[in-house]
Length: 453
Image (cartoon, rainbow, N blue to C red; front, top):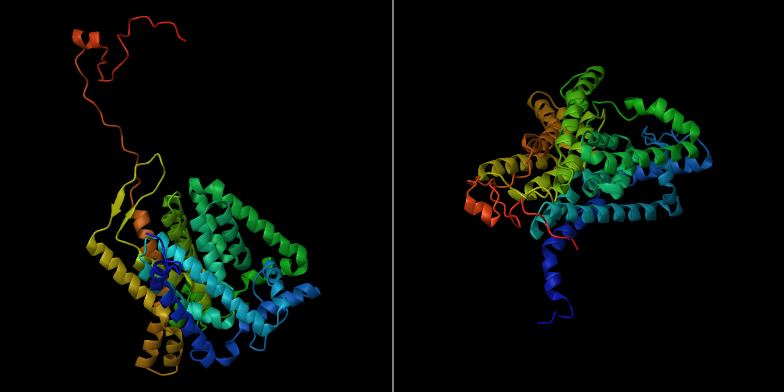
């Protein structure tokens, strides 16, 4: 039977993926056209800051001195300003639409491949990618013209790809925003050190030093002073802060106290991520995917300030947890036996319910609602506080759902060869050339061998 020239069956097979994705993109365009859920100043605001940083770099000025009319600075390393110089080739409006097209295409392609990697069926792939596109982190990144989706997906995809190509992606993500450098905790995994961690560190260091060559004074001030001054970005109590420090600030703790407690809690979280990296079976792409997501989630928790668009890993982790099948097959190495890892139906249902609960806060503008409720008193203020805590709680829950199966899993050793019972050494056995272990030989051991050809 020949395939139709129009490729009809193949096209129809793609509809479960295409339809939800097209509808999600249409929703994003509607949000931009109507200005709903965003303020007028937000459209292209961050991309304009990137353009200013690139302009100052090319003009030989300090890229960290210019401040916007809303009090914001360029806050990335000089290498990031160097990367943004091609944006100056286009007018601001054209550059913004091209930038938005790039982040949509990259997010769709990466989301489809990651969901397929966990075994999601076509409809789940389409709905999952659509959920990521309409999530609050991606919506905000789309409106602002943010680089965060590329940073998050570069880190996660870099872990999945592993090898040198994956190391380049992870290194570029870390060189642009610094915090993805937490992926170097993979040094705790012997299988990852040479093929992933070392290339990531080398490439990341090299491109970071390119920023030093392009803007020596800015590079020096950034890494010796500005990087450590979180107040330059925002205070922990900023309504749209999703970090641990933000969680305590939303609960009423002061700036100094919330920063201190958030910093103290960052230590066990980083240590837990280090332990997770050690337990990952590096030969398994799904294990590396879990590590990449956990690293991105933990950076959101331990950073002093985490904007909505920084946390794209949260909705991505939620849909991946919901879409993955209950039974997966362990693909370790050729030498190891393949074992099915089966999860009980009750455990799977419980994990999916928790994943769905963790996903919901990222599909809704809960921090905007919380900020509005904080303007009131009594029950309204309490409700606003509880809503503001849903995002940090979700980050913790998603990291736990991804980590615990790997941390609890016992290491699987290759099965031993079946042991054969020893046989009695009888005259008949010796005459037939049978060893006492049951292994046949060519003849009695005491007979001399013939000439070798």
